[in-house]
Image 1 (tube, rainbow, N blue to C red):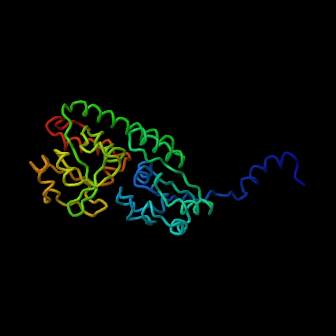
Image 2: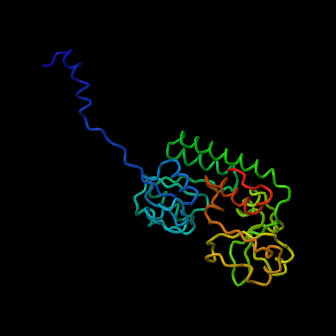
Image 3: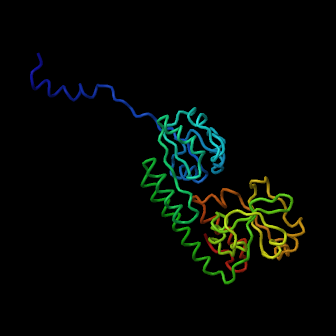
Length: 287
């Protein structure tokens, strides 16, 4: 029989020899381009097993992770087939029934806001960082983003005359779909110090030839690949050719996620757009 002293000395070894139950490795499905970008920036790329088709940056996301489809047209089966134990989803993810089925299967979903403004971006980083237990990395990324917006505001203060600008989401047979108030396009133009010539409209609206000529934009902004496909030359159409923007062909084409993703790179994207729209006013101001 073991003496009391012998038992006390041996007991730590006995307890340590018992098998420990390791936590299951985290398997994240990321829904939304900004969400995926934030997870990568926080250092959690290795835990992502699936992304949606808008997760275009970093390029490794869609190359190395399973593609679960378009963020607003998801199938629960495709997500669940990856055996995730966490879904981090942008607010616009759906349809709602698909997300409900995922939750009913026991997979927690963390929802992330889509607000297209600096405060919204900071909140996105906070929520994603909290979801993966990375408050320190989140705070560091927020500090970097806020410094970027501070530099952007300083550069924007040097603009004396905002360029009258039209943001064209898509162009079908010369008929543009443009961004009015409440759109990510309007928010980006504001960050870049530009004047939105269709601010009287709300949301994404088609614009007639007459409306386009009356708006008289000095510059056109498009994405390199929008809903209608690759960006085409708007000045090939008579109504666009009749605008001040046609003088010098002032067309700015930028990457879609970079321009309207409202993720960590937004301060840089807004500065690049500002520089393209106001080259004589802000020069080569540092980002």
